[in-house]
Image (cartoon, rainbow, N blue to C red):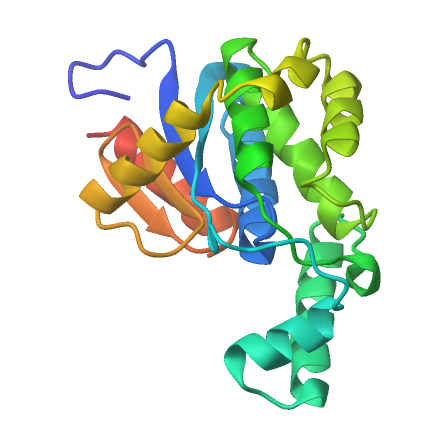
Length: 217
């Protein structure tokens, strides 16, 4: 509720995330649950913004356990334990992950697809579909045929035209420039009504409380 006693017609939530970021998928699900408690998704305007964790990444045949071990310099068993812990957290949120099938890859075109979907009113659904494709289905989210099929799943049209142009690349780059301006260095980052910022997958309750604070601002 605003300080004049009027509940706004819609509340804006800007979410910076990456398609292959496990904490982003967890945070996205936590946001869904928090919004459901606060009156349902229709009351909120949620916009996903691009944040490439590794803009130079290429498709890899290396499994995520090996990838995490190499990237963070930890033993393979430690990497397996970390991924298992994340899968357990996902299960607690009603998500089923199959990280043994996931492979690291570039996400720029996936972000371009989310930008296209946003212009058609399907941005959050497209982002969630990409997360599920990567973490639950082991699909390669840099492959254009795969992206076209995922777009069809959520009703996004003209996805195939993206790959013949640079359409929506400017949106991706602008999102990342805005992230730098806001000093966003990690994802997920939620900006709620430009009044509250939540960084990380801190849980449904943390998001619920931040949204309520923003409503009272």
